Image (cartoon, rainbow, N blue to C red):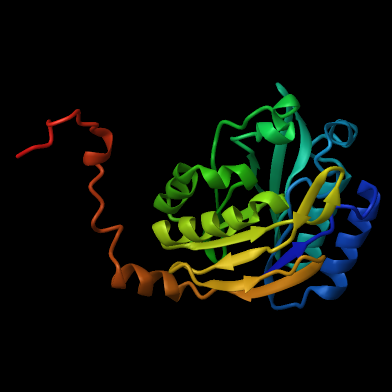
Length: 268
């Protein structure tokens, strides 16, 4: 399964500029053998709260309508990064997934990131997102969710072969971005596909470095610091091979994980 990672610049311009550019990329720069196109977090608005509030749309707004059209015309899947979407209780940081037949699934970010002001505007989601495709089950999380191993574990346990991670990881913590993606891949023995931004958004500098990580932690593709498209082939046979070599899933002891022993209680 071939994936295309659209590592977009953080300072391209207006939402209309981004939509036009993504339309061009998917139509002209993404080959016909690509099965999935993945976008970064908040790619039309950036992370400044005032721009986010101006960019809030209903779920059927112009950006999601464009992504639905592109997925249908190109007969592929699009993990639409994330957008600020007006929900019943407030604004969500929301990822829409589209396939050839239209809307497939949606995910509202469960863990808003306070240090970059996200808690000022974002209502946390309440559910994780697993979706079925012609290539098997897939999952999605958004940026800060990556720091919570429970998310990837729940998705993998439910059968996800790959987890897509639209993100906006800044320069100061980019080493942790790689560490976390590799850790989530190794501990769950699945593919992790992380798509980051490049460039500057206000005081935030994003260094790119989008990554695809194999189930054994090997980095298959790594982005530069600049805006670019990355391509990678995911061979799901690797999941079987890794799990046969190191049978973590067979060796789980779920009964033990709910027990917290006090000093001395674990002695034989």
